[in-house]
Length: 308
Image (cartoon, rainbow, N blue to C red; front, side, top):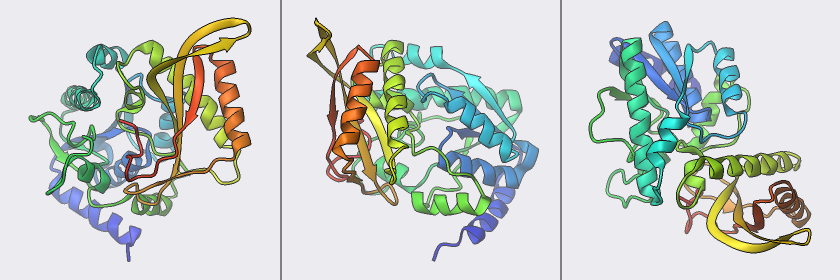
C-alpha cells in the first residue's frame, strides 16, 4: 500500500544525496509540479528555485494562483514572462507533435537561461508515470509526446531529476494531502492551451479559448459533483451561425469532461443537459466569434484525454 509519508521521507533523502549543488524546478500550477517543488524545497531549501514560465498559453488567473500557492508553501520562486517567445516559435505550426516538441524545447531554453542566472546545474520536473508511458517509454508506441518527456530536445545542459517519475495521479494527490496542499485547480497540460487549439496557434485564438474556458469552469464549478477534468477545445472547423439578424461564419468549440483516477483511463462525464445548454448559450452569447458548441462523449481509450 502506498504511503505518502514514507515516499516523501525517502525521496527527500535521495535528492539530498543525488543533487550536489543548486537546482531549478519547473512549476506549471498543476498538482504534479507543485508536489515535486515542495519535495525538492524540503530537500534543498534555498538552493532550489521554482520557475513558473508564463507562456501566454495558460488559463485566466493561472499566474495569480501559482504565486499564492508557492508563497503559502514557502517555496523560493520567480516568474518568467515568455508569451512572445512561445507564440513566435509556434507560428504557423499545425502538427500536434511538432507543437509539443517546440514547446518542450522552448521550456528547456528558458530553464537553461534561468539556471545559469541562479547558478544551478539540475532541473527538477514533476514528470509522473503516464507522461513517460504515453511518450513511448519502454516497449510502447508513442501516443503523444509530453513536453517534459518526449518533447525534450536531445541535448539538455542540465541534469534532470524526476522525483515523481514512478507515481500515478492518485498517489500524487495523496502526497498533496500529506503536505496539506489545498485543493488545486483541475489537471492542466504542460503545453497549455496550445494543445487545445486544433491547427495553428495565434494570440487571437488563445485569447478566444481563454474566455471560453473561463465560462466553462465557472458553470461546471456549480455542479454538485465536479468532473475530474473539464475543458474547451477550439476546433479548426468553422460553421455558419446567426447573431441577431446577421449571418456569421464562426468558430466551433468542443466541451470535454471526464472522470479518472490515475489519468491512464477515463470515462466521459454525462453532464446534465440543462447545464450543457447553459454553457453553450453563455459561450455563444458571450463570445460572438464562436457560433457552435459540441460535446465530446468519448472514453479513454480509444481517445486520449486531451485532443492533441
